[in-house]
Image 1 (cartoon, rainbow, N blue to C red):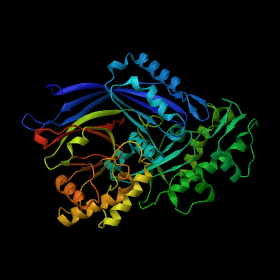
Image 2 (tube, rainbow, N blue to C red):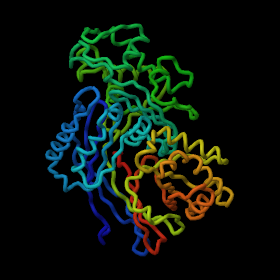
Image 3 (cartoon, rainbow, N blue to C red):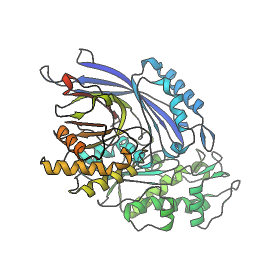
Length: 485
């Protein structure tokens, strides 16, 4: 930051989804909100969306290959439309979501877009991670914090329905169902089938229909299949004893339903049809975009109403997953940190928060929760580093700090086997003693960074810089996805 107390930066967010690709450009004001005698604290104080792209169909070379060149051309076109050049972009995020993240060349997309932003946060979002992103973007997270109510956001796109439950602003549960509006493709505004995906074949078989590519379909024929898919989405909200069809379509473990669900938000490409005043009446209206999305939205609305759920309209629907992008808020971790200086700097470290409410009271319990969260967010041990974030031990006693340290070592055993640095972000002021306890309990030398007095959230990204002030503090750049509210 320069000596001025405020600065504006330009940020871009790019979402490459199963069916659609889009980007949003924002102008962010960052400001030092601390008074002159205190350590600077830089925060986002204002955000203005200055350009929303058209919504494009995600370009594919075939069913399994993304057209990286075509994606980069979309971004270039939208930059020109916004009157910007890559050099004028300060930061941003590329999020690859849904079925697209399974495509063979998803990583090639990142390379193709490398020249279009100054400092990209890049994530190939797994099913549960995508649900959390969408729930933050739709406003469900903020709704739960402001109203002190449990709310679940379901992001229904072209290939998947991603569930994220929020309590007091925190994501507490998530799951994913292989149900989306683009699982059967039609000629636009037509009735001829041109593609049937594997999940759609499962649903067709369950409903007793044997449709083939090339056949013409009537609305009465299509409706039972789409209704069955909508019922699967609603069933996940009601019970853990799922029907055979729902079990077959689940991509991750189902919701535990430890909280009672009353309020539901729907985002994603299908959402606008959930909140429409009337449903499609003809096949031409259903297949306007070459799929059955409008009908799925309407059937989902009816199923939710019949099941007694209260539909809340989100602040963002189709653009929920990424409508803003990563930006930078510089913080300083306090004077009780524990680290090896050779490990730093670290860049683009994804934050995982395994304990949104309470920390278990045993080593085994702590380890089990960490392992489950790593699995839930589909963390690939062979790729980039991750940081564990938590409030701190149950109490500030040495016994509880020691139990927490041993639980972390056990829970991160697989991750540490790849010789990655163990990165911990603790809100409580106990970083040094926790790090020392873990070093003492480890059965081999571990590269470790344990910083404290910082509050971060699930799926944030952080950079940790070289130590300052004789090693007593480190600068931490918090790259949080900036969503519209």
